[in-house]
Length: 134
Image (cartoon, rainbow, N blue to C red; front, top):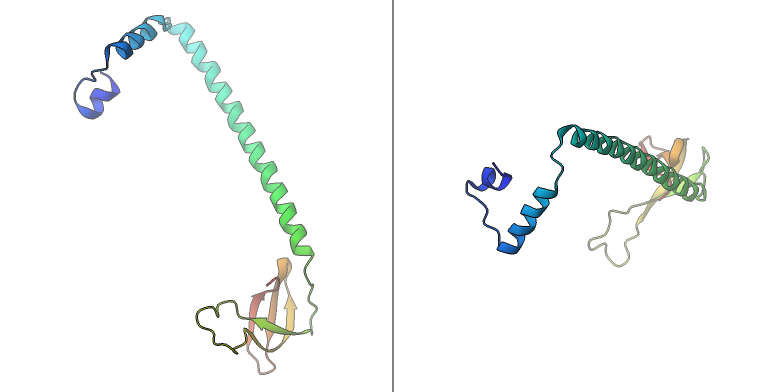
């Protein structure tokens, strides 16, 4: 039973030219099962080799992108504990008002974490973590 008949429940009627080509391709196919099995075994090994090459290329690409990203991060300002900073409010987009500033308050840096995360706080006790790169 053909896949077409399995899906649609009826035979597929091809034009005469295509039907002749399909019949010719079927006749020229190798019907020796042992030879076909060896051929299929070789194709499976080739597929595994292509898959491993794809994984290797993906790993190399990710390493390059990480290197570029880390180089971009290192160029920015490094904060030290005790620095006085302003906080940029990036969410203030819709109708902020003409004179409303996106920068808020005087904060002091309490702790600096890896990858640019900074813990800042008011003198009054509110402490939170922010992205130091923005």
